[in-house]
Image (cartoon, rainbow, N blue to C red; front, side, top):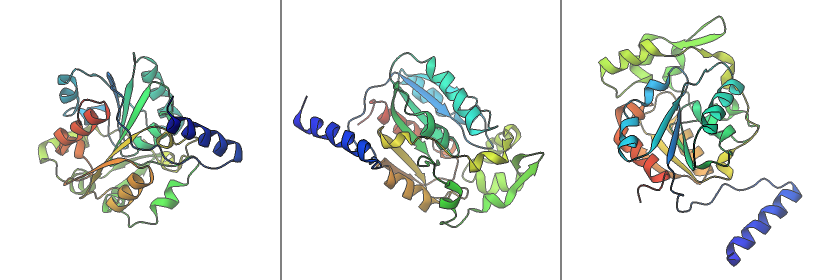
Length: 257
C-alpha cells in the first residue's frame, strides 16, 4: 500500500473518531464498470433515458433504467437498491434531477464505483435541500406545479416551455404525456447519507435550465469535487444532448478519458 494511501486512510479514521465531516472524494481515475443504473427524476419515467441507453449499450455496457415510484424517498431508494442488487460487478449510478437525491442515498453500495449527476440534486446527509435551493432564484418551471391528492404534475405550458426547453416539440409532448405523478412530500425528504463524499462523481450542468438553477448545479458540482461539464441545454439534457450525457457516463465507467 502506498504511503499516500496509508495516510489518507489514517486521516479518514481520525476524522470519523473526532466526529469531523468527511471531505468529498478526490477526483481519481475511474474504475472500469460493466453496468450502468439510471434513475429518473420527478415528472418523468424511465423512458426519459431512451436516447442515452442505446449509446451506452453500443459501448458494451449492461444498462438498467429504474422505474422510480416517486412516492417517497424511502420507496425510490428501495427500488434502486433492488436494481443494484441484480447487477453483476462494478456499476455506475446515474441520476437526473430529483433522482440525485436517490443516488446520494444509495450510492454507498459497494458495487457502485462512480456517481453521475445530470442537472440533479445532490444533498448532503440530513440536509434541508429546500432551504439550500431557496438561496438561488427559482426556475419558472416551478410556477407550473399542480397538486392533486398529494401528488404533483407540471402543467402542459410549464412542461413544454420550461421543463423540456431545447427538446423538439413532438418529443416534449410525448414526455409530457408520460410524466409520472410525483408525491409533493418527496421534495422535502432528507437523506441519511451523501454517497458523493466517498465515491468519485461527475456532473453535467445544464446552462439553460429553467427547473433547477444552473448556479445551484454549479455549487453542487463544486461541493462534491465532481468532474464537471457544462452543456448548452435545458433541464432535459439527457433528451436534447444524449451524446454528451452518454459520453460523461462512459467516462465515469472508465470507457472514455
